[in-house]
Length: 53
Image 1 (tube, rainbow, N blue to C red):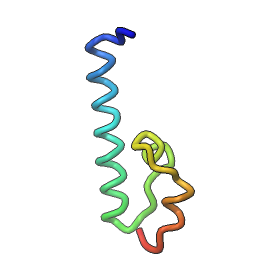
Image 2: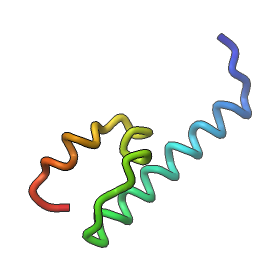
Image 3: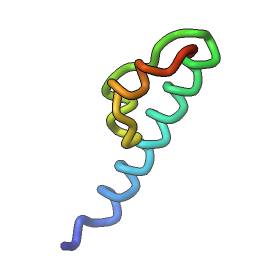
Image 4: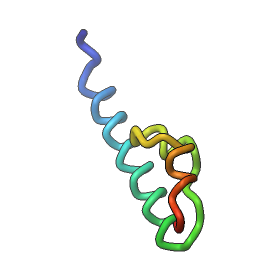
């Protein structure tokens, strides 16, 4: 299962970007995008059940 160096780097940057976007949304009092939460392995439905974001 050799995915290649560029794939690994791209995947890392995508995950890092999703983490940054979700963090900014929460800090601004907004709900993060579902796609960002899924990329981070967070269930969007479970995140919706949190009292405050």
